[in-house]
Length: 234
Image (cartoon, rainbow, N blue to C red; front, side, top):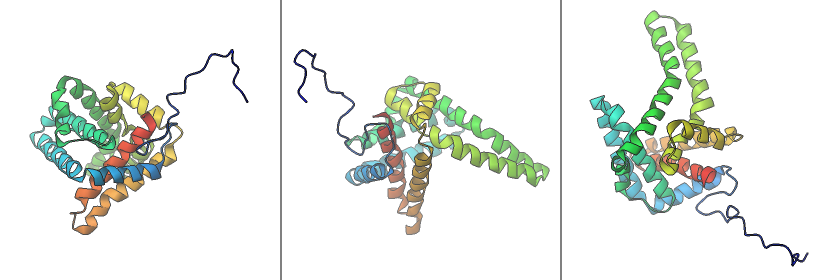
């Protein structure tokens, strides 16, 4: 059918472009594409991925040891780790990305700290019931706490796990990032659950080789989340 010569030509839709690097056009997660793209990112930059996430692990351990570091160090370390994952997913990335949170300390600390506190707040009832049940010798309380933890983990946390990506990538505050993560995963619960299970299996698979393989499989599992985020958010 020929175009109306009197009709104003319309510009092409900027969102209807061909997917690249495992990304989709409609905000839907494609698990196969996410895994494939994560594998490509990992094999192309294995040294940076392994070295960078090892550094994140060491800095996180120091945070826990110092206790106060949990509040002033860990949030910005996680920020840098997410930045590294996003850059690797975009075909770049360097170990120095881990320090991106320190370079933007004021911007990184508050939203990531609030996210951490929100995660803890969601899980505290479960911990309280299990610990309280153990001290009181009440098996029923421990079971309720365990059931609660599974319900929250599989019903809420697997969707909130994408919130840090929105903070780092789009500069959102903690509350807006959680809302964005919730909206992005809306209607995609089963694929989000499947991705979580697959990524967990891949991450743990490295234990087969005397834990040495985890240096490869753990970064790979994290990159699956990064590529899933890119599919949802672009």
